[in-house]
Image (cartoon, rainbow, N blue to C red):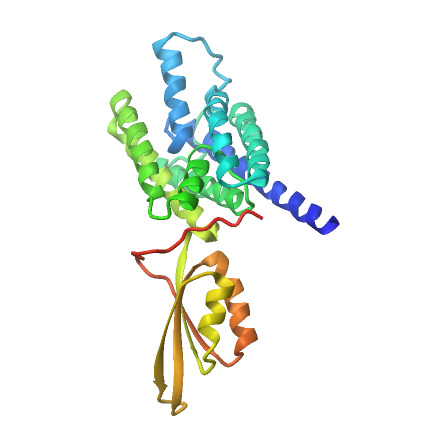
Length: 294
């Protein structure tokens, strides 16, 4: 019980650190550059723009409504997160979104760019933003918005491209930004989001798939991998020219989060097995996207 509490506390702290990084990236790098974030944060920025410029709502310069609007957007998504992921995910996400919404409002935004070069500003800000989102997801929490929708789709619709959802939302945000301001604003905003997405994938291992080839003499290895990992395994006989003996090759696709468990299993079953891990450019077919909420 004590160990479980410590683990839960650790996950929660990591999730909070993640949303803090995300909020800092927004306030320190996007706001001074008058750029737009992707996802529902970008949608919140557009709603704020409509309220201020369209409806004439007066908002103090030092106050940013984006965090409050993002909180309101997330309210119905909390229900979706509860039904699709579970209670732990829900309460972590609620806490993370509350803190994120406050930080998006109260973190001071500099009057000018932190870095003189706008491109470098986008890259550094994107790295910080993606790192924040990645460790939040890795801790079993979420900053809300497309994180929740994406996790829901990954669990219930394995063939659904979560990237398509982000692409549609981002296309909408950046099109409005290009119309309201200019193409340069939209272009630099896209660079920020692209860098953030790449960084998020590097931090959140579950987004990265790897192909693992196991060469062994153990005939039951494939069945053991299948039962333990709940992943499809393709096996075939081979001939080892070096060992001059018959071998069996097992091929399985897992995400990087599962790779550690798989390597441990292989060492237990056959310490002398030859293992090759490859990062495929593309996987087409029935690969179940999983989200391990600890």
